[in-house]
Image 1 (cartoon, rainbow, N blue to C red):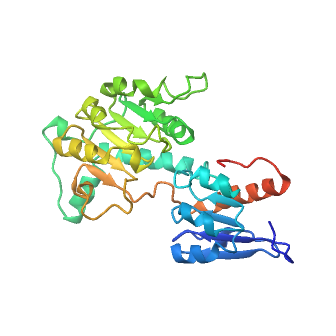
Image 2: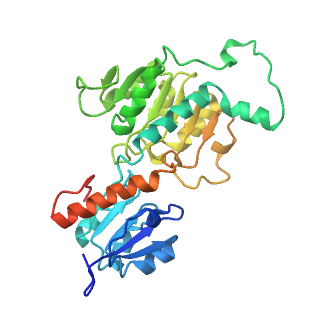
Image 3: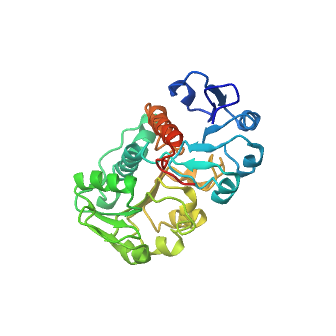
Length: 321
């Protein structure tokens, strides 16, 4: 992948915030390019042989990237990349799956605790310097997790990690995935997706940890909210389009579910006029579940491993194309 007369390669790190280039152990001769916006990325495409990118990517850019041979996604999700376009241009693609599986599961657990322990309301009261007295209505009080049921939609790495955390809180865990149960599953039960609606009346919490695919787009719709308990919460650390967002807003407004913890949305950034901002029983985080101080190092570890595999003609780690 080297330029003529060079021993290294041109590698572009394209992200508005992450400091990936600083974490990359460049080899002699490497040309490292940093792109913080779409304009800078497009300017780098004529030279880049390796591209490390996620949200800034647009599939029409592939036509301008004559030298590009490998894309390392910054995120575990790769729905923004057209497999057909990349295959047609001879560009390999790998995901960053595994870079943040622990922290996304931890974030989901934090949303669960924040909702059931009313931490959002407590923060609001703190801001107003208002001491909330004891609550006489048991149904209005904070809740405890032991003995409740958590349905996890997507029992992959993140979902399995969340199941392990949930079991530590004495939650009964039902995992949803296409493949059948194995003896190594941490979940108490494993069901196929076509039984999700059937299981929802049992759920106190529903967590979405699945990838966005044609099968999972708008997987959770009005019929699912209608099947949930009025006391149940939805947690989404997957992708916004896994949920029918207007149906979610309607369910929240009508009190058909108790609330939601949301890290991802159909449109991001979440528009200021979205009704989701205004619900006191909704926790909104800005698609930050995977962000930690170690994220750059985790992604670069996958990137450097894949560059070595490419050089040796081996299969990529987390290969997509």
